[in-house]
Length: 189
Image (cartoon, rainbow, N blue to C red; front, side, top):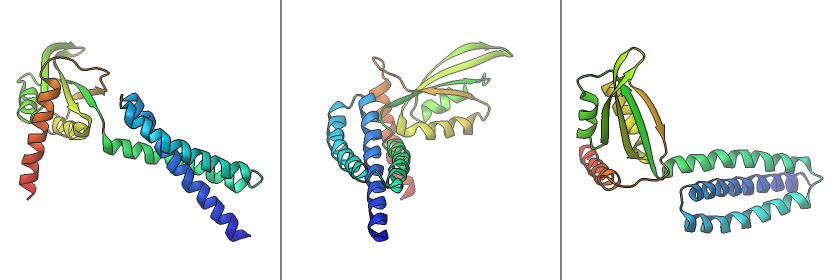
């Protein structure tokens, strides 16, 4: 009896991890505009959901099943978010404010292949220089590291743009980043 009970807990726990992972990924795909991928993921998600919920409802008198369902749900959210981080869909815009009056930061970032728009700004303690940088999300952390290497005191704010239109941004950024990846691969080999 105990073996059967532990097996049921493990099954419910596992099913809910898969269900919520698919749910999280579907929501992210939906928000990013990948409607057909989201629809495909949702078909798998709903089958997993029905099976898992059915097992819990059939054994509602067993508290360990509810606990397994809840724990699986929480872990599924974490796993789904980790998968989304690895997929890194879309773009990120980073606004940077620096005291660098020699404009080294924008020049060095451009040399690294980033699209940078910069302008003079005024801050509480005097003149500043502001930049706006668009990059694919998969390069977000690398961009932060590059900025910190060049100017450790730079102030950064990032956000995901809802729509991008015009300029060289998207095509040029994709092309330059893929060229940088190839260079990095050659350095490693």
